Length: 193
Ligand SMILES: NC(=O)c1ccc[n+]([C@@H]2O[C@H](COP(=O)([O-])OP(=O)(O)OC[C@H]3O[C@@H](n4cnc5c(N)ncnc54)[C@H](OP(=O)(O)O)[C@@H]3O)[C@@H](O)[C@H]2O)c1
Image (cartoon, rainbow, N blue to C red; front, side, top):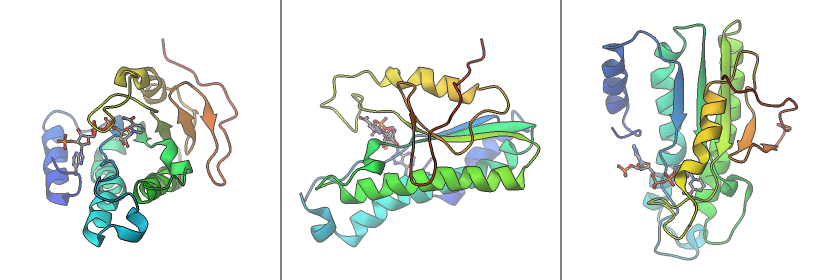
């Protein structure tokens, strides 16, 4: 499916509804890298390329969460992860639009967590942002790190017991991060055995 398409998302949710009435976890991973073409995108990139990046890396994540919410909110609680990047904290020349998309994604994750905590108070909700770090994938073919290096933190955050972090930021190595007004999560993370 294309996460920019509300129709595609509705069909995906419909497919899940064939097998279950509730959904426990959602990992927002899809993203586009900074497109090649100019070393100076903030002064030289087209509005089409800008819209493509922001629509995929931010709007698509929001649409996915919103489409999945009826299934997620059906049970006693749920987990959502947003895969961000240190680009969301960075101002590297040549990567401005990508940096902006990840910074906006950080804010989307924290704001989504705050809104859901209010709207679904009483449920066990943990919505957090995870920085996967460098890994050799389609997006980053120069890296020598394994994409599986993020998996253990994804599983810890998806399976964290009730009363865990909501609206916090983590690195794949377990570090707790601060972003804007959100300070580091003050507790150790727990993993279900
Ligand atoms: N790899 C790194 O070094 C690194 C570092 C920091 C953060 N991250 C973040 O980690 C996450 C995963 O990245 P990755 O390295 O696995 O990137 P990747 O190999 O480029 O994979 C990105 C995935 O997103 C999908 N996608 C793109 N646009 C989509 C859309 N409109 N609808 C549905 N799917 C779409 C792609 O699907 P198709 O192949 O079908 O287009 C692809 O499967 C991203 O959020 C990325 O920003 C990666």
